Length: 163
Image 1 (spheres, helix red, strand yellow):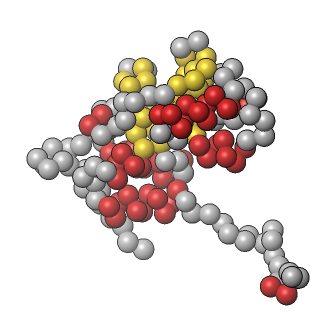
Image 2 (cartoon, helix red, strand yellow):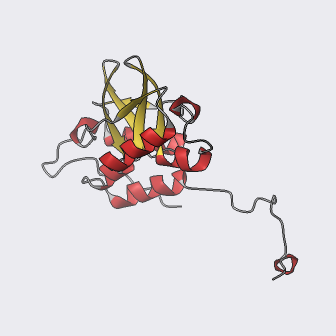
């Protein structure tokens, strides 16, 4: 096993902060918006992550994956599909802190805050497009996407399939 240390400094040698690379383009919806509306928001704004608000308070988040995996009825309110287990990070934290949170929670995006107010979103893509060492990002990606394939549930033999 290789352990990589993150290069979390910019080209000037300064420590990079989350606020230096986070996305400030925050797309939001309300808890009663339907799935079709939210899908159109994602498409229009070319995002895969939307904040779900309830009267200007963060209720949850929904990702394109949430919608694809759980989509049942496009007229259902988005609150049925959102994830209310929100992981956030202060904008003054370092990039390595964001990567550690992403690895621990196996997620690709974090809500960024400052004094309990939402200021942005940071994603693996944001970090990848920064000056952070690619090996560190790859280690995080491997952890996030680690899946247990064929854990015995689909224990079949190739001869079990008939054409």
